[in-house]
Each structure stands twice: as C-alpha cells, then as structure tokens.
Length: 118
Image (tube, rainbow, N blue to C red; front, side):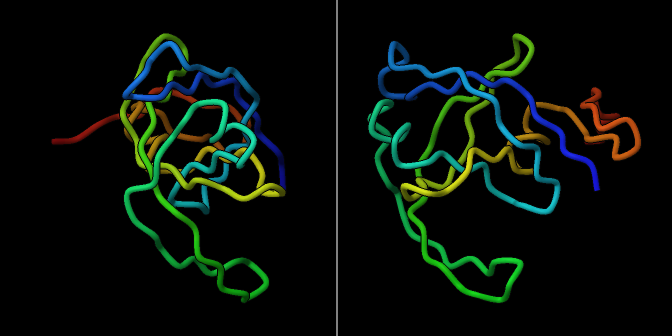
C-alpha cells in the first residue's frame, strides 16, 4: 500500500484570513477530510453537527463536523470536515477530493483531474 500526501490550504469560510497550509495524507477510504484540534483552533472552525465513524480496527468514535474552504493547485471548494481531536491525523477524504474534481491514481500515487459526469 502506497502513501500519498498533498499540500492543501485550509481557510475558515467565515474568516478567510485564517488559513493554514499543511501536508495531508490522501485517504481514499475516508469520506471526510480531517482537521486535527490544533488547526481547528487556529482556524476558528465551528461545529455544525456530530457523526459516528467506524475505524479500521472496528472501534466507533464520534466527531464534530464543520465546514472549511479547501484549496489544492489553485482550486477552492467548500467542504464538510471532521473537527478532529488532538491526536487525529491530517487526512484528505473523498468528499473534498471529488469536490475539487480530482481522483487518486493508486498505481502512480498521484492526484489527477477526474473525468466528471453531470
């Protein structure tokens, strides 16, 4: 299994001056993008609701969901994001990835523009 990381900018939709730029692990098995607690505080992101998630080891966790503006290669999209806990990792999930119009090539471990359908 290969690891793919990409650099993303994340902004607070209510205050776009609050921005971070970090390397995110592309997780094609995760629906949501995850922003750890440290960055949630820096960005001032606010929760909208909660969801339960099943982890790979079978455990269930509850996390708050908020909204953020995600930028990759000059393209921006509004996306729901998991407002993570202290030890959660920076993850780019498929909802954000598809919103940006990209797809992960598992062989080259790179992101490419997706062929989109209406």
